[in-house]
Structure formats: C-alpha cells, structure tokens
Length: 437
Image (cartoon, rainbow, N blue to C red; front, side, top):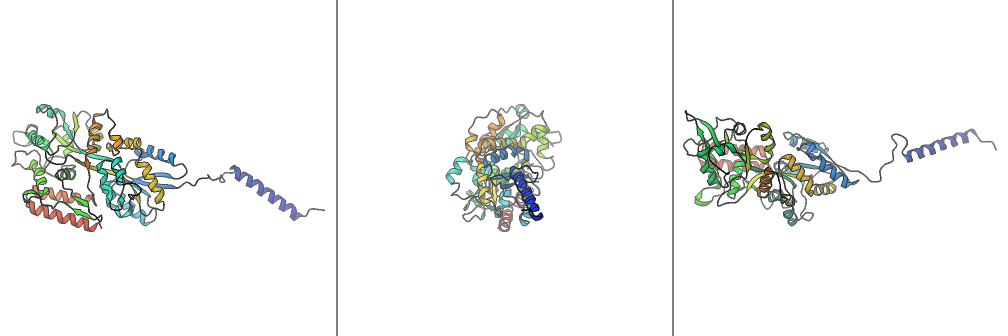
C-alpha cells in the first residue's frame, strides 16, 4: 500500500519532535537545561555591614542549606536604609531579613515579626547570648537575634599617663576624677593645652549620647525601656535619694569637666573634635566604641595609646553600654518560615560571627566564644566588656540624640536650671515615644 504525502510529513514531524525531546531531556540544547530536583528559594537580606565582611558566613550557610534556600546579601547606605526599606516594602520588593544595629531594628519594629519564645526559649537565649541581647526581648518573642556587640571603652594615651606618673588607667570614677588635674595642662594665658578628658559638651564630643547613657545606666536608670505591653517607658524622670533624679546627678558629673569654676575643668566648646585632639596627642582619655580602634590606629599609627574598661561606680552596676547588631525577619516576607530557619542558622554559628565581629572591630555575642582566651590585648578588653554591656531600646536614634544634646547644652550653659532641663527632656522623649506607636 502506498504511503500518502500526509503520512510521510506526520512521520517526519513526530521523528523530529522525538529527537528534540531526547536532546532537551539530556540537557544538550542551549536554553533547555533540565531543572534541579530541588526548588531553590532566594532569601534577601539587607544590612549596612560591608558585603565582604559577611560573605564567608553567608556562603557557609548557603552550602548547608543546599536546595532549601539561598541567602543573597544587599549592602545598604546607613543614612538611607530606613527610607529605602519603606519604599521597597510599599512596592512589594522589600527584603526578607535585615541585619542592623539595635537602634535601627527598633526604628523599624512595626515591620518585623518576632521570633516566638516557643521557637527559642528565654533559657536558651540567656545561655547562648550576652545580656546586651536582652534589648531585643518583647512580650511576643525576640525582635531580633543578636550578632555582635560594640561596647563603649576607654582609650588612653600611654605617654601622657607616663608623664603624669600614672601607672594604670582608672578602674572607678573616683580614681578617674582624682587623675584629672595631673593630666590637664594650661598655658601662660590659662588656656587648655592638654586635656584629661572630653566631657561636658556635645558639639565636640563624638559619643556624648553613649557616655551620658553610661552614667545613667550605671546608677540603674535606662532612658527608655519596654513595658509589659511593649510600649516605651521613659525612665529619666524618676526621683531618687534626696529628691534628686539620677539624670540630674549624671548631668552634674558630666558637666563639671567643662565648667571653668570647677577644679575638674579640662574641656570646653571651643576645642576641636575630641577624636582629633586625641589623635594629636593632646587628650589623655577618650571614650569611644570598640569599632573605632581600626580607624584610630590607621589615622595615627605613631600614637602610643591603649584600651581599658570604662570606669565603674564603687557603689553601682559594673557595666558599660554599646550597640547590638541583630538579625530580624521582615513581617511582609512571604518566606517567613525559611527566614526564621536562616537567622537561627546564622546566629548560632560560633566561628563565623566571631570573624564578623572581629572585622567590625566589635565583639561576639555568643558566651561560648567570649570565654575562649584571646592573645590580642584589644580583644581581651572587648570580650570582657561584651559580657557586661547593656543597651536600651531606641525608637529613633536621631531624635533621641537631639534630646541628649539639648540636655547637655541647656544644663551646661545655664540656659535652664536642672529641674526645668530634666522636665523638658522627659517631655521630648515622651513625644518621641508617642509618635513611634
């Protein structure tokens, strides 16, 4: 029987289709590769830490996750990250995770899903992390898992100490005040030519907010805290012994160093920024964050300085303050379950986060890492201070910084009496709290 033209064409088409199918199945044809058996889900993380610092950690986690998920990290500008996050979430293109200092975590609190206590208990948290991580505790769970802590420490000029016959840095505030006259030098016109410490002003003291927070928290007062229903509570108005508030006492101590009428006078508003004076070898003590060490060392490699714990109160809480980096899950993420798995895997890796904290110039938050002996003298101080570091929930770091600046300026210049100054600050903080709801 003769084959029709139609049958011939049909056989050719079927044969061609069969051949194409074989090539597709084999993955030979470009653009027609076979898909992997596993489905790869991409989890996007935003942060202000430089990409090369977190790259190794993310690679490790991605390898362990296999086909379950893959984390991609996007480095953002710290100055614009809040606006970028708001715009991205509105457009439906926001990240699944954020890795930020605790102030920015709290500023974006309404965009975050807490990790419930059922998934990570309070006992586990306390066993794993330093107490500074408790700043992330809410009634619903952990707002973020801590990654690194950047404590406030004391940088001191060893040459100026030697010239003043001071052997060791002060361990308490009494020693600190007693050393001040030995480290302050006036010229023939009674102008400051060498200062003991940069305290008493806000315009030329880099970390004035952290220093005042330190003084407050050492006497048991946090500027802000979270109440039972996760509402912010203002703490600076509490009245203590003899009717004087902790804030008033802390301000008086801070301001004495810029008051020409006091024997502790050593600093004023006309001087250059404290970092510049310290690097020039004219400032004996500088209160700075651990993360500032690389910059200080690089800017003046010939400066003979060392690092110590901040002074403590003889009768008070032996602590320092700092900034805590945390990992949090964005509420609008469609990959919440995987995102929580990712932050747990990220936050519980001892070695990797020790590397990250070292690259940041900060300290790890894992207790198991902090007990490992360190050969580096700077790390020894940073690790020790990480164990006693504390932080307070800050809903808007720029606005609260302005409150602290006004506190110092109003009280140190005599524009207001201390009672009025404290009342003004209390109202300003309360307004920030009300607007953050």
